[in-house]
Image (cartoon, rainbow, N blue to C red):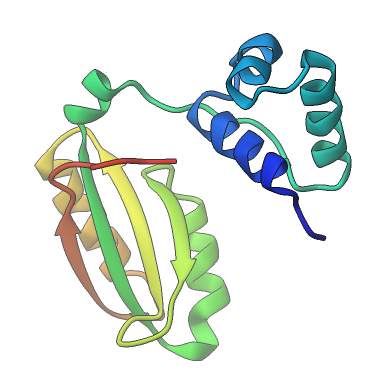
Length: 143
């Protein structure tokens, strides 16, 4: 499905603030409010917009410990490892990647000690060969 440049611009604004009023989005895109509402409904029907989510405020997020945890997994154990990671609420997202690692998890916890415990738990999962973690110092931008 091909999206128009206006659809892409609309999605970009919704990534910034999905709760922005249609009138504000319309003003920024120089479209009518009705057009914006119609485009959003169409994108929802097409499955382009699958839902809306919560973004944590910068002040709160700054006090959390975030890390990228790279995992090498034995191939036959991949489904079990993915399900075990899905069950850990500290793991916010999980991507399958190419290269030296099989998976990259984004984890968020309150303290460095909690991150140490989490990485130990992940490393102990059956099927996980090894892990490497990098703490996130700051987020320059997020969409």
